[in-house]
Length: 232
Image 1 (spheres, helix red, strand yellow):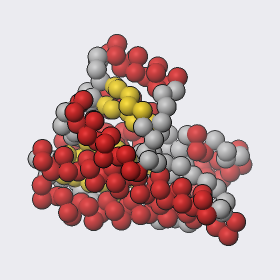
Image 2: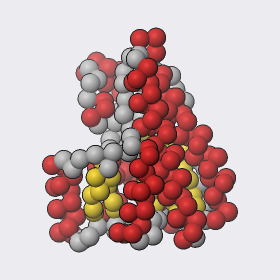
Image 3: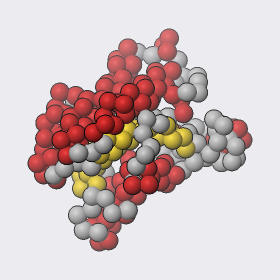
């Protein structure tokens, strides 16, 4: 998902900084492609977003190396499937740390620079599990629901200084996190979707691009659902 968003934004003319633990072959390829089409449009900065205590240092380095930050897309996330009664507490803590605490703390430091610079855009990647129940995803759903509540309240806090804050809630999308779905499960999801299909990564990337653009200058504190009508 993050790679698809980075590709889309780089192609749209943004200077994109991809933050992840490691640079895989797909990201390397995307950087090389972006360099040919628009030199300097896609960069990689290695960082483990689970290291909450080092996030302030990361943001300071990004500001020093790249200058003012216009937009933040909080996309990093993990998922553990399993019923709550049997889920190890360590997994619950990891989910909350990476999916909720990390984006909140990262946003804390990024939004400070946005306020100083006179505005910006924040897009938080939530999920339809935030408002539709799915067995085995209770903790994951809780972390995504928290992002929506966080986005709405933060939009009130920072709107007066020109910062827009929104969420995108994808449905089941073909990513590494959904590759475990069996063909029967996939078909069932498609059948209950209004458009009888699944959304894809490009659909989510388009939504993020829109919320970062001037076309969405008066949109804040809302959730854009991209699920082919699964929750309609």
